[in-house]
Length: 458
Ligand code: ARG
Image (cartoon, rainbow, N blue to C red; front, top):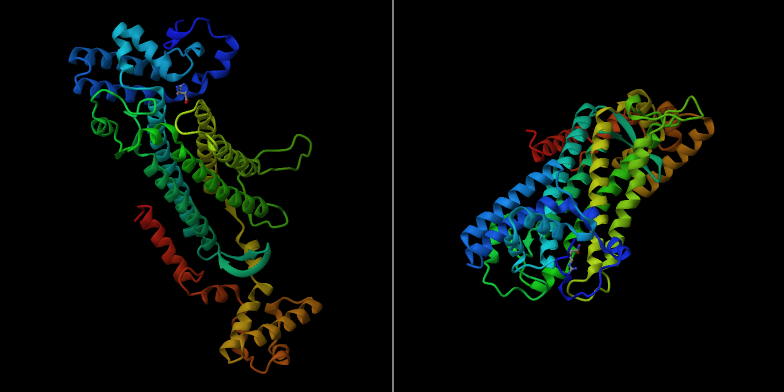
């Protein structure tokens, strides 16, 4: 098979070098974007009078046939043709004859690949935004069901204060909302057209890049041909957004793994989403969550990988840039599968309310008791000390805070009266957190309503 660039070469390429330099085994994933781009490019060439109307029509009909071949899996990609771009060009020439060679007029693979990638990324980000919305909807559905379920919040993984379980789910919903904003931002950066930048300097045919941008749905035209062909910062933005989102998924996984242990006993996962042990008959393992957590490592690795590839590359294009694709594809696939699996798992999550409630109370109420004394006029620092001594006393006695009597309370401070005993209930304590963003029922209900509105559920 002849290579499009073989004109100046006297020797055949070594097989090993072909294998080493090829990218078609993975960049064939950009075939449809490459064809879409070529159709727009052919129109621009015709509009500029670089090719005739007849040639335009012939080329476009060939490209549309190729699109069908790619979609049906009939298109054959050859490693010796190096990458998706040269494969498509060759297949086009086979379909329409020598005129196929005109498609590469006023274009280099350097602006071509960047254009394919930007087209591809915009589509992928839209899919991720949909996945993220589904995950948020699952979290809000859980929140609606658990407004009146109390759990302890944990700080330093020690029981801290009573909160509504809904509040916890809404917290992660916030995190996944910021992820959507990061992806939307990445979309904005990807939304510029490189085509027309040529190999590095621009092209010497009078094509209208603004016309091509409009044809391809790009919001802007990249203003500098070197930047357009040399830079992959727009891919870094996506890899970063994937890494942060993976980190959020990983933390949620970790919570649920802990919560599903016998020691916590807060939740159980449906059998259909768990796996067993080949040796221990009693085991039901949260492998799905562990893998979501584990795969976060790849998401971080892919970001670091491309950052490292880019560092030190002289402007403009270098072949090193070909190394951007595998990390990108891997991060997108990894994140999308993790999002999907997490959404499924949340929908099947079983919640053990009694167990949660029994852990929500106890010494988690101590801060509220200290605040009671503050409202009676005691400076907070002294109130903290009084309740601290009370906790020490009860620990020695083996009693929970709810079991304390008024007489015992009075031994620690004369300011206590029977209204203090009413406080000793996790539901009461949670409802005192009325500040904006707090865990009181009214605040949590408001958060749910806002969330539903933001995701178009109201
Ligand atoms: N496969 C190449 C890449 O992914 C396409 C661009 C190649 N350009 C070149 N001048 N060799 O970057």
